[in-house]
Length: 237
Ligand SMILES: [Mg+2]
Image 1 (cartoon, protein in one colour):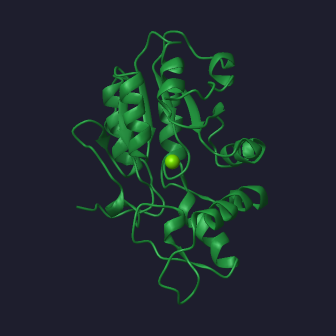
Image 2: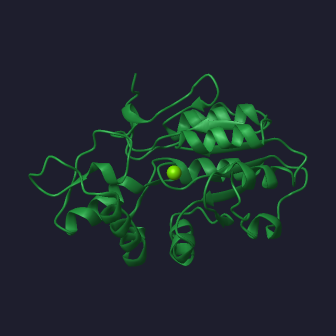
């Protein structure tokens, strides 16, 4: 079903052969993609009405009841990455949490951003204190995650906002601990989840705690709840 070749970085990156491994998505996990994309879309004279978990189907011409078509959405998406993808804000608490995880685990960023955006995406990560190795993938993430996980004897955690990617990892690498996280508060109510199969934690302090616990990253980890999320987020239940 998936003939997409594995990204070559999967085999070339240095990964500690015994440490735990954290493989993590960018958009809506480390960065608030939708907010950045919305700014771009608005600058093009369009508007974003977030009423579903979708990218292009939330974009409208002002006053029109029907969202723009997929072709137009894809055009905007590509232009956004070509033009200025790095107006994206950081998910609150993400750099601090990754820094703590990286004290005990290898951290790899796995994003399905367009390949042409590699340099800009790497720069965004570095500029925002997340200077971890970057893998640009395409398609379901199960196979690349399985390949990465096979390079260490330690346990692996995978974090993504998209249910299909989590399902794909479950199918290809069932031993990998899977976590869903949706950084944009507006998208959270609409995000399809399967909490019986993939734990869900939408804020970084909670997520980091859960990852540390699953990977048995040592003690004490009680300090995780002290991660400063800026701005502070109210608990949502
Ligand atoms: Mg994502």
